[in-house]
Image (cartoon, rainbow, N blue to C red):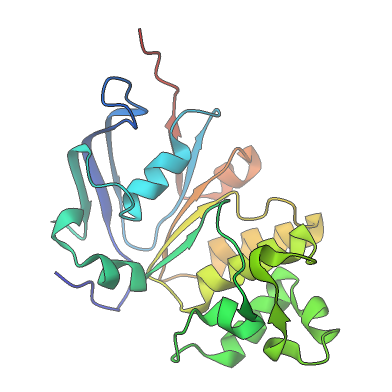
Length: 224
């Protein structure tokens, strides 16, 4: 299957179970149903499986038990490249690579709208940084984001996740390390400015969770 590029996607888990060690599940018997376009917070304490659930939805791991469905079709039936082309992902381990700022945002996608990227950069707080660069988007960046402030790296990665206007957004603590003023703007953008996108955000931010359509709360599993 290929995921068609139109509208948000429905996401469903049925008896989902996964562990990096098969004898020690991180997620156990989890069931949920997210409607297209819903904004959902994945909450829970550290070690409860928040980031693991996002990685399962991103297709990173396939050796899980139970069912994980995108638009009613098992995720294993999809062409992974097609699925990821319609998904925006931000995980803490993501990084900057050697190339221009535009390369780092567009990831080689020639269909990305520069006007929309400029809009995102302004809302997320990256535009002030870009305006100080002599070559702007054509500025070469060091591998790993060396010599860049951490908050600038985070903003670049968030613009990258949003730039291709994905149908599904999987974000882990997307405003971590970003100034409070822009954190508020980012949350407003995610919740109000992306009506056709299904959004899942893993975060411990309780105020954000209350603003979402609903929350999936995970609890750490005690393994004996």
